Image 1 (tube, rainbow, N blue to C red):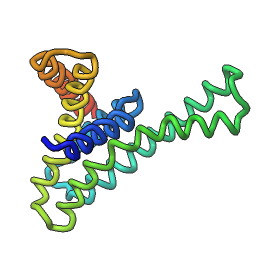
Image 2 (image 1 turned 30 degrees about the vertical axis):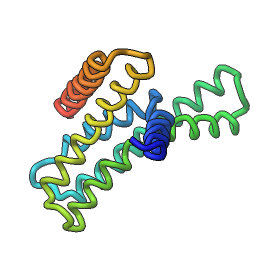
Image 3 (image 1 turned 180 degrees about the horizontal axis):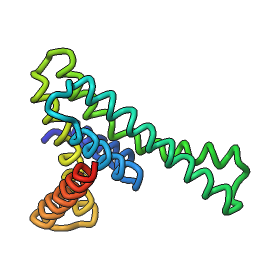
Length: 169
């Protein structure tokens, strides 16, 4: 591997870590996948995309409200700064919408068939969780097989959470 590709790989890992390693982004990843999983067989990719975006934005607003209230109620900051901090922190919950939305849009625009786009959108969150699990174990200095098991375990837990969420809806 060249030094340039090594730097690009390290930069990609850094971007992934900075944007996805937070409670909000992990929750958002599971939420997005679960909401997509609710998509019925007769729904178009556009309908699934719109339903997912609206649902996640509603949950995001609820999280912003809860964080604002908690920050302000603890007396940490005035209300304006509490709102700003809540928006900033909770915005990470929206990041997991990007990749599944792109996948669904490939179906909407006919670049791939809708079923394939739906499946990619559904499983991209699980892949993200697997990568995050692997990277978490890597950052902790684990051996390769522990990294793989960590990634598989993280993805499996995500699948269980996605499945349970889909079941109750």
